[in-house]
Length: 159
Length: 164
Image 1: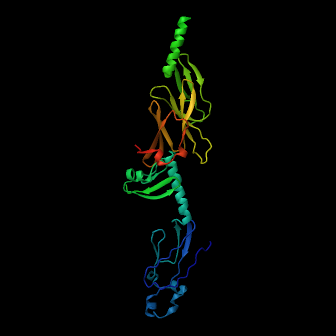
Image 2: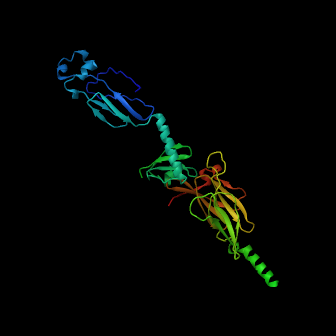
Image 3: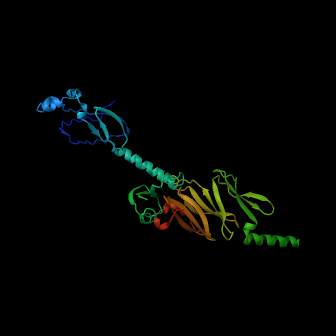
């Protein structure tokens, strides 16, 4: 396993929410190890002792529920009391987003050319021969233009 | 001899004014399946003489007479080389049954959908244009050069309509 990112925050959260954004290059299974220290009841009584930042001591906490790690990949919350968690990261990096757009474009082209059926009525796009104004007025009156990829114009619509 | 001449003249007049009564055009083989081996033949009635008109070894379909039965139109998957793949995939062609000449009036890409006769001289060609929308272009069969879709993609060349 290759280590991709290492980040030391040295931050006192004190019950506050903390988030850290990072980017991955491709979809896959990643291990994320988060090390933190927290105070037990006894340690709380001795709050002036700074050695509690030692992670080894954090593992020996009598009540591990006193610290919880909140990880939010792709909007999903993972609330854990353990220090290590492996999960599937399926949000898109910039490169994946480009691939995703290419896939959308290819699907749209195939639908327009009649090579496949439109799998969902929630998909809105048009190719050549149609103006944006006409499409917005007649097909997606409550929609909005998203982007143009090649000759294909994509729209979102609540309809 | 006179009867024969009268018959010959009558036959020629029928051929000249109503060729569909003399010539029966068809695509063979007639199986529904997609095939590049479809050619256009015509049968000379009432002699049951079949003659092959095309020999392009390309798929052909939708062979239809004009409303006045003086011309025929059909679609052919020409797959000609183009700057972008499939820019010249389909052609709409007209057959003049009086001289058996075939003329191309439209060359379209893979957006090409279907064609239909509007009147004796005009064919409406549809393209698939997106979700819930098609676009059409009316083409005069006397157009000197084929209307090439890849060179006229802009909305001003097409009329969009909601798909049924």
